[in-house]
Length: 113
Image (tube, rainbow, N blue to C red):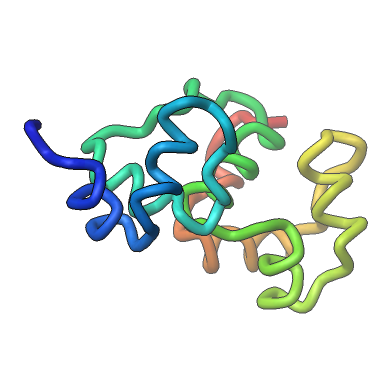
């Protein structure tokens, strides 16, 4: 691409040092930067998600939301989201529809569980 670190940093919304830290694996990008990183890369650098928990985590990451932020926005208990993402339990139909609406992804039409 021929871009300097400071140019990439500006595109993503961080400083040059942050790009250096990411490139040297000194720190992992915060989830809130993932949408901009994916936009910059032009592809999704994650493995394909097959199960419901994997898909839920992937789509949450694609939107750049932490568990805490998603539960605040949706008005659900953090332990519910944690249980869904670990596969310990599945959301009720109402919660599943809320997730689909918010994340703009169909979970009910797939064979995710």
